[in-house]
Image (cartoon, rainbow over all chains, first blue to last red; front, side, top):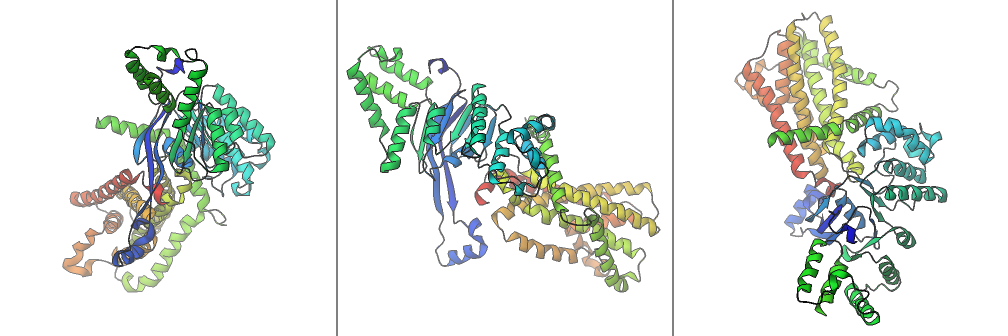
Length: 317
Length: 262
């Protein structure tokens, strides 16, 4: 992390909250609105899909977002990719984003595979020249050579997502967003797409991965964001700890308290090997230590809440 | 400041030029899918409407009038362009909701591309219109080029109304029924098959109807072989500008709200 300290984070979310409103008069229609207004039953329900989510990632990071269904993962990705504007808070993004959200949708069933490829390429912001050059490559990668003139709706769902992945993964985006992408396609294609993604990541791209496959997250990610019912349970780079806790949670349905865990861990580490394990910034035992630690926390600010916590607990002792 | 803003939106539009052309292609291909006559329908359907109208109304209004078929055609060509562009444009945003909820693209592109395919239709019909003018013995002058003014105004007006309607349609699905009733009312109020002479002092009320203004513009040039007054031109441009401005403002304001209602 030390070398990243002064670098601007490529993506920063600050207290992002997104609210859905249901039952307002635009939704229920004029007639129903008037009836409810007259019978005084008119009310609007609001629902926060995400509440105060904050994190930041740097170039080259691979962020895994985990959480049960309805945790607000896909909504958060929409905010990141600029499709939605957060109700509160803001998203700061310093790069080009390629988002693969809910693959296979957004294609036009009546058009052929070739036409859809060009259309999707255009939507992702590629130029015609680029599409002309890479079209063959896309089709080859998706293994759809024989289906080019077929109507898109006649493809199997696996083929559809293969095509979507092939188109979107061609760019060299600064940020690649993958929503449940890797769980599509058959085994052979899955291996191929994972290899492709690894090469994109090695090319320096930042990747955000939403997955229900914990082994996959463990293997690929270096940072984890855990959402539950729109709330941010934790964000940190201790992939193993968070994944372990998440798997525990899936069995017991009891949310862990990460603050407590962090403190416990700290204490344990201190008792075991007292000064050795501590990083240089935190060792200064003078009164200045407090401020300097806060400063590092401030420059580091959004990076991890966990580290900030550790810093403050450290100086208190 | 303002200049750079315009430049920014221009460059954004340029960036999306490829997407725009692909969307136009898609709309056009889909329109004539599974029809035997394909694009020929663009020419045929206004001709058939014209045929029906001239059979029905020629005996009522046509007797006392020279070039009645052309008179009808002027009304018809303007009205069907308007009707096609706005009725189709209304659903353009919602029909593409699967796209703009997944990918960050400028939303007005969907309406623009729908309008382009209406414009192509209009162009084909216009060619037939010119042929009819020749057959009917209308003398061609350079004045015909002035038709570009009402056509451009009409395009802008259609886009403006389309922007308003497509935004409203996302929020209120009732719009499509209301609009079809309204366009019918509009058709009867646009003096497509009758003349406004008999209305006497109320004749000027017709000028409140933008469509009538464009239709009459056509007739002044084609049938009367003259050019409308400056005030009349201002009126035509004004209606287009107002519709476009309102539409653009609605889109600007609701840009990020659409997604919650699809």
